[in-house]
Length: 211
Image (cartoon, rainbow, N blue to C red):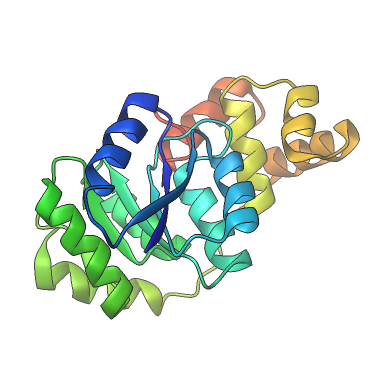
């Protein structure tokens, strides 16, 4: 099983690598510390599975998962996160994740989750509510309502809320400053929010950034 680890803390990545490489059936083929790099490396290296944190700079784990699963459908993504709230599970499953486990899990549970996702196509950690959540996930997958913002608009909103300038956002997303400014204007008009504090509060509420 070829795995990429995505977490913004190097010590977490190193710890996971050390643990997972104990298994003869697992090879760590890449690491990434932010969402944009994760998407780029997924396309270049094509791992079998990505262990994805949710709270990431530049592009959060939810949006990175959405891009990876849509652009590279052969790659599976499992959320490995500190969050155990309903909203984060909801958003990761909608983004295309095949599993969800928390960082409070032990080594055995982590390996079981990886194998389950690889063999059965889905896994949930013991701390995530069992059969009730499975029913909930099924309902989510049947919900085709469109989000208020496009994927590109969510990416730009995250960068704005993180304090990136127009030039910095344009450089990260390989867009022109004029295109970023046009997206920013559309975001404000769609949401009816016209100040940076309002946009930041919205981004936090939607899980695009953490407090």
